[in-house]
Amino acid sequence: MYGIPQSRRAKGHLEEALAEYEKIAAAYPNEIRPWLDMVAIAIEDLRDPDRARYIFERGVAALKNPDARDRLAQTYTETLTRLDTPPPRPPLPLHPS
Image 1 (cartoon, rainbow, N blue to C red):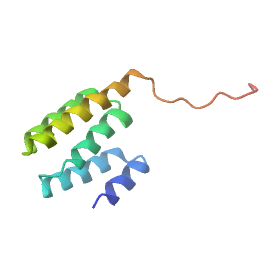
Image 2 (image 1 turned 120 degrees about the vertical axis):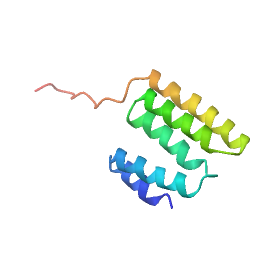
Image 3 (image 1 turned 45 degrees about the horizontal axis):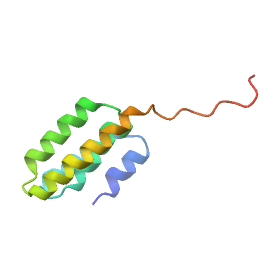
């Protein structure tokens, strides 16, 4: 079930990955994983805290299980701290050309 969005994310097709996770979230409303993965994409890959917040709020509204909502909130907060570090940069060449 998660193979398609994971593959899309691995290939850098982030919007397509998000769309696939949205389909899973709609088909399986009690599943927390699509919400966790969408938040991770928004924060880690897109580096877009506003979008992550929007996804998080929708997930909290959609999930009926209080434990799942709490887990989503905890993971959202923890993942959000990753924005405090700059994105990885390519290594510098040893000998400038």
